[in-house]
Image 1 (cartoon, helix red, strand yellow):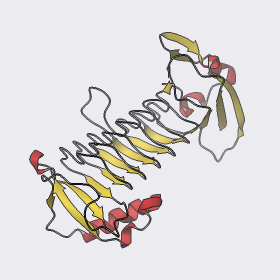
Image 2 (image 1 turned 60 degrees about the horizontal axis):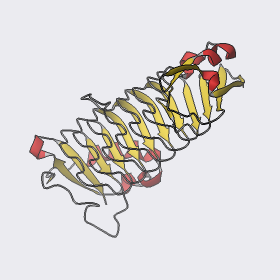
Image 3 (image 1 turned 30 degrees about the horizontal axis):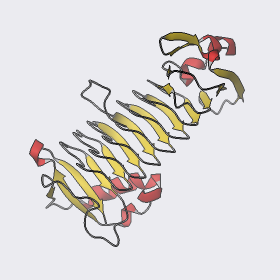
Length: 281
């Protein structure tokens, strides 16, 4: 199967919408056909060749359909939009909506992403080596449901409203997150390796948020918890072992989770919530 490479020629003057440029969509096309694919630059519809040099890197039967984007794509939005198969690798930064509405495949961004990454993601894996902007793993504007499945792995920091209205899946951040993380969360698993901002879990109904920052020298929670999260009275040792063994595969701040004891707080009871904040000690 072809290993297709799109190398950025120069930075565009306006933002470019990359929807439709996925490994599966390009896998059966010739280089000439790929160059003629249309993307939107502001209000203009322009051929892909206007922005990228298109080439291939041979054929390997053992690889899935693979697309590689090279260059600083900070002005390119919807990279991996509605991707459902194959492998997409970006060697650089990308703009808004990276991996939004994904249902399968693998997207690996070797840089930072802007806002709304993995919004309404339903499957597949999105790995971000750098930082993510606001509303990652959240909802599209005007929608009621956030991330719905799959795995999001952010090795840097994440902005505000991370995992807002999340319904399913696993969202992992190695670094810090901003305000209102896991707000209005319905279900799923969020794992945070650094500090968190204000209003963690505001309006949370169900789901699990694991806070894995090393607390060996401090037995208090890593940030003030709202009074609408109450101490858990029932032990959940078996569940914790299952959950921690799933998260430990990501390494980093989650590497030693199975051996750490936990404190659990349940809520947000102001909203009738039955979610849980799990503090690894």
